[in-house]
Amino acid sequence: MSDFYDRLTPFYHLIHQDWHASVALQGEQLTKLIDAEWPGKRKLLDVSCGIGTQAIGLAQRGFSTTASDLSEKEIERARREADLAGAAVDFSVCDMRRAHEHHGSGFDIVLSCDNSLPHLLSDDDLLTALRQMFACLSPGGGFLMSMRDYEREERGVNLVKPYGARTENGKRYVLFQVWDFSGEHYDLTFYFIEEDLATQAVHTHALRSRYYAISTDKMCALMREAGFAQVRRIDDAFYQPILVGTRPA
Ligand SMILES: C[S@@+](CC[C@H](N)C(=O)[O-])C[C@H]1O[C@@H](n2cnc3c(N)ncnc32)[C@H](O)[C@@H]1O
Image (cartoon, protein in one colour):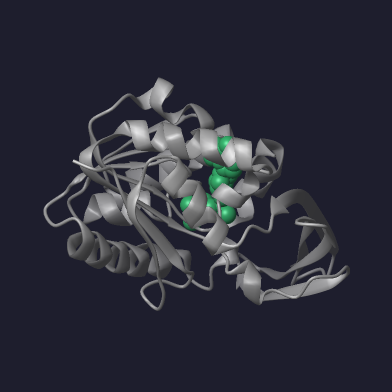
């Protein structure tokens, strides 16, 4: 799995139409959400930060930000992006299933955005990660995650999910995913077709991973089982549904 993201790292920003604009927008949207749910809380841990899409924007908005991810290459790039943005983030490599062993307690907010948790393929693994995140929080602290709404996704094989085309540095990239379901899981291939616009030479990168198409209802049930209270789904605040839960005081 970390191999998928290690290989994706140089292209990761291309998933977004304008990655820097996404960093700013997501920072603004998540700050609003956190301030509405847990006013004044500022010590934040992102347990699946990737190249820093949420962590950098939130650090720029005054959060004291610690961030980790399973992918070493993404963390290397996240450090570079944070330096370029002038954002202070304490980055490290960590499997979210060991978040508490690695980061310890005392955080006000723990977050995991952009469908990271469904990379864990069983309820047992999800519960382990959720319990670790719960333990990272101080009493009264909040957990926030975003995920795909799998109830709204078609099931089947050869399902094509287009991401569009981008041009940068004399190259055009056409991006799409192909999904193949088997039961509650699906295999995903992320294709990046890279064309050199000067020579028209074409190179295709195909990166493969697997997801658990868990429903938001089931994820909420696992959050409750891990100890979170006031668990609920919030729509229309972010580009994906957000699930929130609070560690009881
Ligand atoms: C779709 S990316 C989202 C990254 C980032 N939050 C963003 O929005 O750009 C999913 C991330 O989950 C991370 N991930 C998957 N399994 C993980 C695990 N067990 N522990 C920590 N990170 C994990 C991947 O390495 C990847 O960076």
